[in-house]
Length: 450
Image (cartoon, rainbow, N blue to C red; front, side, top):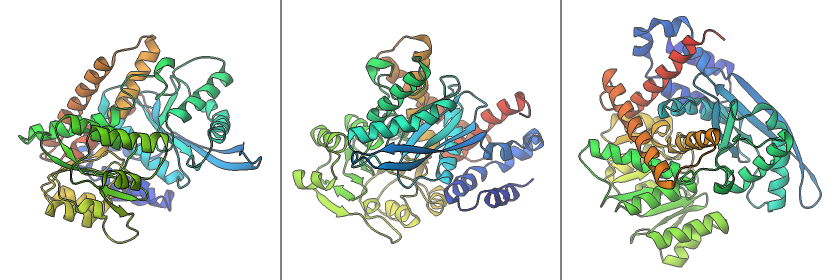
């Protein structure tokens, strides 16, 4: 069956799931030569099986708010593929989530996890719950209600969720405590736990640091280095914060940061002191990035509603790191970045480029690090946390950071070598998708039609 036919069937079976359709089209675009050479992948219908989750779990979440009113939300867990290990992927709490979004994220996670070399399957989940503006008590009661259903479907050798958008250390703590109470046992069923109760050092920093480590390898391949480069970064959450931190420490100059209300442009550059303020503002006060502009005299631009571009991506720079959310970079934004001197873009968010933007950047001479490779540092250290939980021993920050660097370097080399092997030159997206696919596909064939 042709790739075009598979995609058409996918859209018919999964209507109104545009993000899932988008990622499938982007990934499957590279598989034709692989399927042509390895007929067994077609014989065993590997692509069709990868696109269909092992199972999709949807459930009601009832909880009581501070006013004593009963609230009803919907929870999800998409267990996508377990060919390489237990399902692994984050939980996302956001009022806008949908089943299609979780399928897209879980499908991307399949290839990302495969690239790490750690025995991890892929899953994703969460709920249409908004933790913003909620008291700690309300968040706790929601997490307890959510876990009262989810606990039936997870386990440290079955499915190990982590945090994601809207799910940080507070939420992981409440979720873990509830799981422990329900199961009456202490096991590493969640990653992103507190350091003193089963977490790993460097987990918080992992995605942002890993993103920069991957970009650093891309630059080395091109005869360049991070030091002295002018950078634009979107978002102001965990990934953005630690991407900025590592860039600063490597001698780069970061001039932008954003949130859902708008972005700031700081011509002088964000330094360690300013970054500390961003962390306090976003992690503790849960304030808006506009407050940074008032404190440090930076230029603030409110969120750009509609249109075909975002002014954040029209700032002069050499390196770009979209770290906010999916489809935040449009085709016009790629054109603007190229005009303003950007020659490398590495994705900190999952699928931050629209389909049109992705096509354009791959046709340009901008070095492009796709998210499934560039932002794999988070799941890599989640895997390292699982290892530590299994053996009951914990490693130093230096040891974990060393392992993270090696994993990101290995992913970079794997992408580059695979792309060249299959005739895609230095196309990192091709290399990442094909390398991840072959690893999962071979495991699926070895395990039979199940």
